[in-house]
Image 1 (tube, one colour):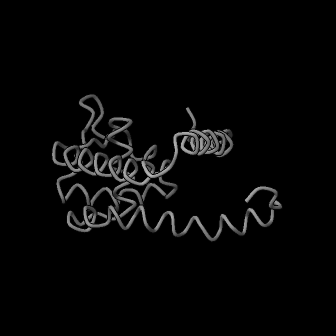
Image 2 (image 1 turned 90 degrees about the vertical axis):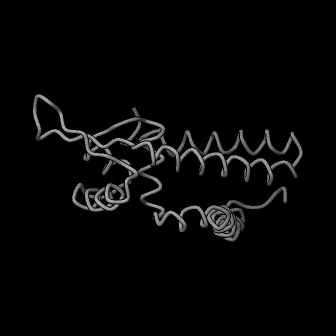
Length: 152
């Protein structure tokens, strides 16, 4: 596939990425559906797992929605018992969102399953190809996050 033009590359990537994403999601959909959480709710749970408790405006910014929309998403996963609202003792208007024990257990399971799926798939690819893939993805990540409002 060497020597393809940038437009051919874009077309090929446009063909590959939906299949790539669909297949990774399909392999994890049973966990998500079984526990009745949506992908946006999963993103929230995963963010809380990695970053710890946060306030609603930071969470809304992370998932790219309004604070009202984030509140709706959080309301549903609070009802499911995956997250909790924590009120600041000094100012009860300040509310933080944190992962509950049930939410942490779910995310750990999904992260472990996702890791195993990645190992199963990429175990069929040479070490050199994995190194190249990781290098390229790392570079794309740098480009995507360079001017991101979420970058710390």
